Image (tube, rainbow, N blue to C red; front, side):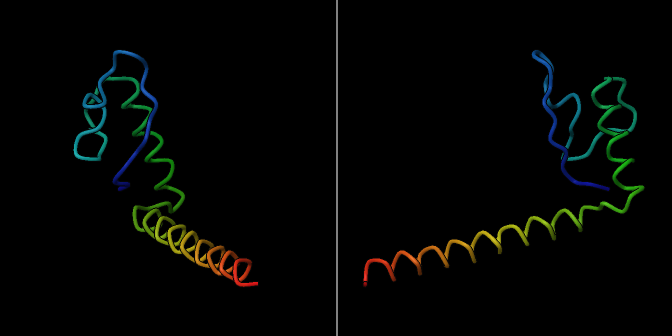
Length: 81
């Protein structure tokens, strides 16, 4: 099961109604919670798991770090020359 879902809630709806400890409650009657659960089910049916999400997050962090280091090297080369 996915551990985090980010939703834009309508005004006046507290996130605690829909998300408890990072998971969508199965028995909620709130329509946004039902939509969130349907979305989680949709992703899980297609193999999108929490592990995949974590891999993508780590990959993106690494890519950002590599790009930043390359940029710093180009700045250093520019200043030296």
